[in-house]
Image (cartoon, rainbow, N blue to C red; front, top):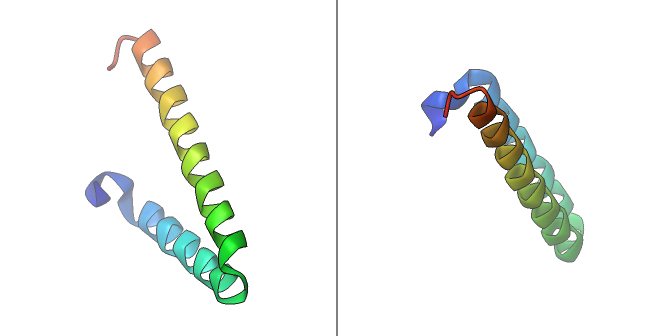
Length: 59
């Protein structure tokens, strides 16, 4: 999976996890909520990209 993201994607994931870690240091419940929102957003984006690729016949 990491080879498909490229270096910029890996830096983005590390930054995302670091940000959630900083928030978790202050308040674990808020960090858990933010993590769930980001996971849901990721699933929606993946679904949209898959749909667009299917409409072009690429997937």
